[in-house]
Length: 318
Image (cartoon, rainbow, N blue to C red; front, side, top):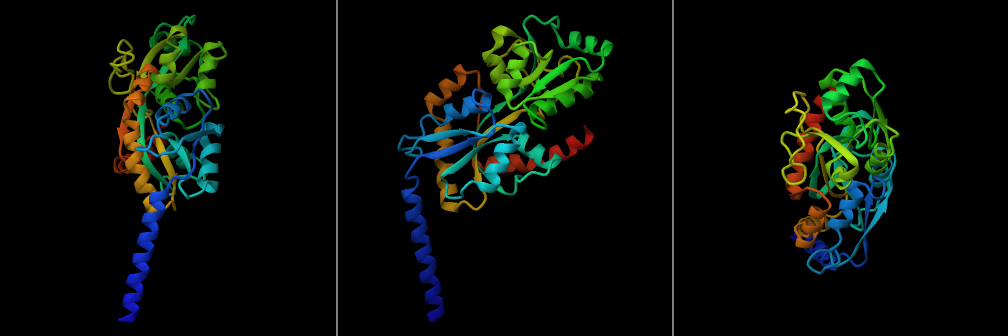
């Protein structure tokens, strides 16, 4: 009896301590690691969706963005998964399919089993772009040239086994032509290579391309349907007769390391999803050509597991 009472007392004390801890969290600014370059789509959107974090109804503290670009996200995510704290003060932005595909193809310190999703803020399809002065006015133009000049069409993207690279592999397979992929540290430098004429084409984010559309030709979108909000006149690859689906659509959200206390995860998952729904956030995302797709923690957990299984098969086929 005494043992049972002692156990119950201990459990009660732990519960009270957890409640008190969650009630005081956060007491200082929270960092958010972005594994890509400043100015790219993930960085751009992360700053928008966290700009109201300091409001009492959300986190009550500001979120500070820390950029750790390189190797298509691997540098930042390897750091986060192995060295970030689990006290709730270090968060990271995730990109799917990026980190999942990389954990399948490479020996990484991160995977869906040692990271915990909090909430998803958006979904950004990949698009095929060329410089506005390019002789290519359509996907067919590019394919025709590539057939006559195998391996000479250079295509930029934000690293290996990110959404851009997956879309590139699908495009190459669907068109039957040999293209040359040029990986960069992120979407921003990859797009600059297209704008500067260092590469002949690029696979990039819809959002980044939309903001630079005055200097680009956006030839096609790698999704199952057109984007009616931002690029209603841009056809899908499937419309053009090329078998490229939505496998490369870039889901973005916030995560923590596994081992973060449940009370902190519960607090964040409840507050962050509401933060993403803020009207100011929605307005700025729209102005920036950034599609919102808000998902709860439970929905993201299901999405991660489904994408893991799907990507294992897709990457084996490619």
